[in-house]
Image (cartoon, rainbow, N blue to C red; front, side):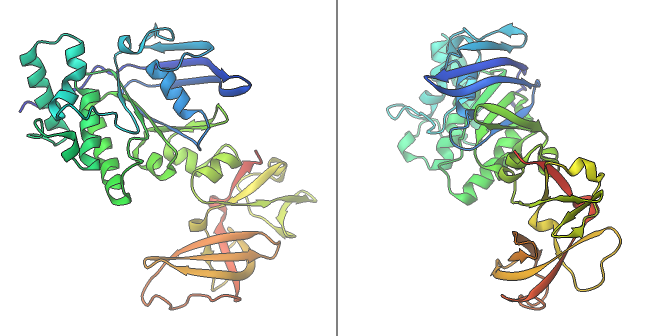
Length: 361
């Protein structure tokens, strides 16, 4: 079978896109550019507006105002079938009365493609999603993962320049979902389509995306690479939504930034700490057994609980200042060797380079 060629990827430009439902604002003047051939994920909690934005791209939601351009062409008023967009729905939306090949070829039949060409392209799409030979099967005979692949094959069979996916893995179990994350990323790199992917799962977004746009209350809170969003979140919401974090209030005393009266070693001056919080990631904290070096921040507290996870452990610690934080460590040797217990006093360290300040928003 001939390998499927890369599609002509199309960039997307969104300016001032707004959508209201009565008094509720679903999209609040969204500005966003999606690069040609990029895998961009829209990440946010339920009700954030991410699916509304995806449906506006697909043409199923008409914005109240704003501009939407595909490859420089204004598309905000174009009907869905005129946009050249492939769509994978959360429910897959497969036709139960059609077999696999008929489902995949449906978009081609609507486009009046000749029958022999439909058969060739359906076979090619099935090979691309690793379901070669499944064309005659009933949809009812397929597993969840196979149905997801058929929905994807249907979306790509007509070589769209843009592929939209609305939480396509949410119905799968954890192991299959993680496997399909790898497969979807592989297919994206193979096909080269501009891909916009919606999810509320931050691990899924981190593992699959070129860039992530964090959406909250109809606004883009931050956009960047997975590393940028995790390492340098713009505010408390982004930091709390992407990864696990605790946040400590900072006091500035005589020009020195402090927590619970202890000076902090930061990457910036004390003036930059005003109205900011110190973000603590569990994996960036370590249990200290010796003296701290000059670049370490030291926190003292009491262990309130310990959870053993096999390859790692998770401590809950109440700091001297009253904040409750988490500390994650790797188990080495005997599982219980050297682990503190509930009620033990503990000293934690975090290197200056791991100190990140975020806006309290």
